[in-house]
Image 1 (spheres, rainbow, N blue to C red):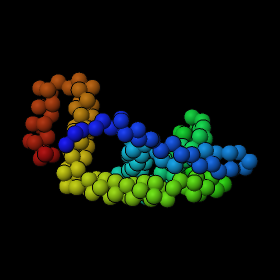
Image 2: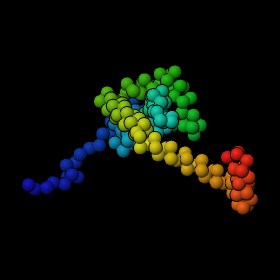
Image 3: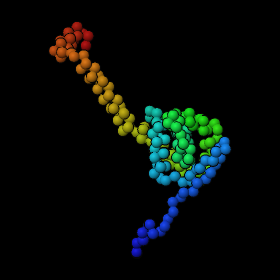
Image 4: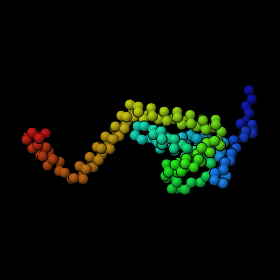
Length: 176
């Protein structure tokens, strides 16, 4: 079978843009986001939604939709708006921006994102609650605690011979 170069097929990227109007402003909404950007967005959403050993569903939803608007539209965001993601989400949600952007994204594109996000959340929760991860977190906490205790002892500049003497006296008096 003869090989043919992929570049000879003249395949086109999906660069289709839909337009919506919000308060008299025309907003461009991508119909397709490259896979690497989708993966990155979903990863960031899940990682920023972890609280202890759970993935907070309210954070997942709000961060997902905020990042969705950032990734799929030509709307620019200030540093402060990016730092206060939940406030940015509330502002966009209250004014219907998120629902308009979601409507402008093709259903299969949006649904694929949601399914991928849900699967990643489930996999992350399984990993967070696995015995291996719980043991790892416990060991990490112990190492940190022992490190702090060691530093505290070193900062006291205790003479080890004096400490042995104090321990011996405590044992003789039944304190230990």
